[in-house]
Length: 477
Image (cartoon, rainbow, N blue to C red; front, side, top):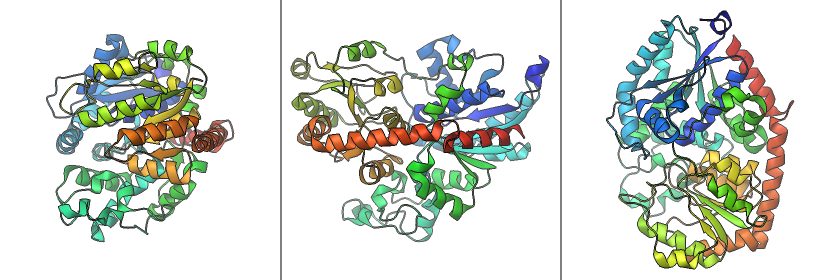
C-alpha cells in the first residue's frame, strides 16, 4: 500500500438500504474523499447487485482510496429491479447484521492494502453498527437522513410510549379522530398532532417491527460521538435547538448536502455513481423543448407503493389540468402489479406528458422549464426542490413524510397537500393553482427565498459550510 494512502484516516459509511438514504451518505462520502479521507462504502449485498444491474460492474470498481464492500441483510431476495419490503429488511438486520458488520470491520483492519478504520459514519436507521464499533473501540458518528423535524419525531417515540399515546388502543383510533390529538412536549413542533409525526406510531401492536426498530435506533444514536443532519439552521433551527438541548447531542447541520457536494467534491469522486435504477436522460431533452416554468414534475420517490385506483386518479387529475408534466413511473410503483395506464389517457395527454422509469432528479428540478413538483415529500426531494426553487404539491406515504409536509405547507409556505384518498378533481385543482394561480405565485416566491437561504448556508462562511469544516476537523482526530 502506498504511504500516502496508508496515512489517510479511514471512514466506513453504512447507509440504510434505500435510495433516499444512500444518496446523502454517498454525497458526504465523496466530499470527505475529496478532503483526503480513505472511504469504504458498505451496501447490502442486495443493493450491491442492484447497483451492478443498473450501472454495470464499473459502478462498484471504486478508486484506490474509495472502495465498496457489502454485508448481508439476512434475506434471500433476487429481484434486483425493486425496493425490498422494508419491515422485513429491518427485522432481519436487527437480528443478524451486527455480526456481519463486526466481521467486516475486523476484515478491513486486517488488510495490509488499506489503512485501519478510524471512524464509522452510520445511517441513523442502521443502529446495529454501534455495538460493533464499540466492541472494536472505533468512534461512530450517526447520520440521520430525514429532516430535523422527522428526527425529533423519532426521538420522542419512547416518550409517546411512556405517556400512553402509542401503540394505539384499537383499530377505531385510525378513524375516530384520535390521530388529531395534539402533542405538546416536542420542542420546536408546537401544535403538532399524532398524525403529523412519522407514521410508524400508527400501530396497535406493542411488538410492531418498525416501531421497535425505531425505538432501538434512537437509543443507539444517543451513544454516538456526534450526529450529522442534512439540513440548514435557518430552515429548522427551532427543532435542531430542541434536539440539542433535550438530548445533549453534538449536532452538525451540513445541508443541503447537494449544494456542498458540488462545491467540495472533486472530479475523481464525482465519477462514482450510486443510483439503483437506470436513469432516463432523454427527459432532459424533452424539457429543453418546453417553455420556462411550464412543466410539473411528478415523482413519488423510491419506496412509495400506491394502488391502481390511486394511479388512475393522479393520471386523470393531471390530464384534466391541461398542464405539461414529466411523470416518473417506477416498475414497482403499483402494489402487486405493473403500473399500467389506459390508452385513452395517453391520447388525452399526447404531446404534453413524458413517462421515464427513473430520472436524474436533481437536474430535472434545476431545469428552467419545471414550475412545480408533485411529490411524496421525502426529505431529499424537499431539499432538492428548495435548491431548484420549485414549489410542491405533497402526497405523503410513510415515515416522516407527513412531518415534512406539515412544515412545507404550514411553516415554510412552499407546499399544498393532496388528501390521502386521492381524487382527480382535487389533483386537477391543485395543479392548476400551483402552475397558474395566486397561491402558486406566493409559493414560488417563498421557494426562491428558501433557495437563497440555503445558498447562504452552504457558501464559505455559512452555517453549513462551517459545520462541515468542524466535522472534518473532528474526523481527523
